Length: 135
Image 1 (cartoon, helix red, strand yellow):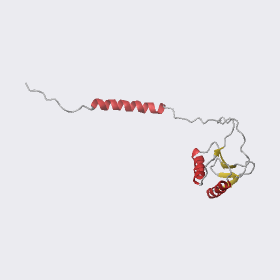
Image 2: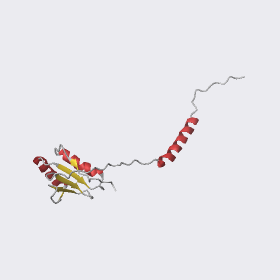
Image 3: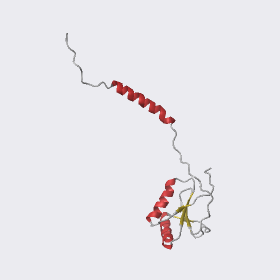
Image 4: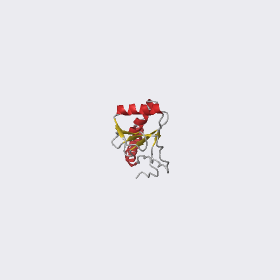
């Protein structure tokens, strides 16, 4: 009778079966997962902005406008005019508020804040609606 030699190989077929079962489970489960949503908090009752604060408005279409004071009329600005006017506000030491339409992409607001930071703004505020529920 001949002796059988043992093989020094690993049988990977069971591992492949387990991997395929896990793949099917993840493929079925991934569409069922809920996508995350951000619930932005609303601001409570706030004091109206000071009259001397300049307001940079970011409209629904992403266009910029400037109000030199809260009581002034908004003046539309091109990107170059925006930088020029923002530099004047910084040099004058005037407080700056950013008021953005609630339906624009958040990146537009970040772009305005980044432009202000590059020009040397140390302190800038975001304007909110008081008691806004997001509806």
